[in-house]
Length: 214
Image: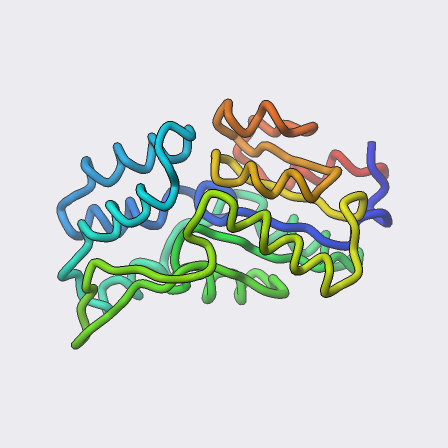
């Protein structure tokens, strides 16, 4: 068991961790390319193909989707049960809460702000004349991006691994684990489970509260 007073930084993945599903799959459904995108997403989350390559391929399939439709979809995505309760618990215990996502600011920024996150980092879908161009850029595009960003945040806040908790579900969350003593695999793929010391199989984020001493 871990004392909540030991934790100073909690870092979460977004898709299938905070949000119930994959943002890009919701967008792909609107663009009528759901099957193609879902297959690539599945391979990427299992670590079977490079995350950067998978992101580029998937976003290219969204070319022509209107920015307005993207924002409408992203601002109405379903949250995982217990997300609000867990973030509130952490914030009430003076933990800095951050989201790192290989997804898109259209979704992460409004939802993380609503939940009370201190910061979120994700990617930007390129838009021209109100429509997606099929291009993407940002700080979270590579398989090691989350680990690099956590290390920067730790250095900025003078926080070490023993004070850091990370939580995710897929292979692109593995790089976070190098920088945290408290690693939660949330309804996760086997590739991530292997490197985590806590496992939550029920899709309810409030269960993570149970890893802390009462």
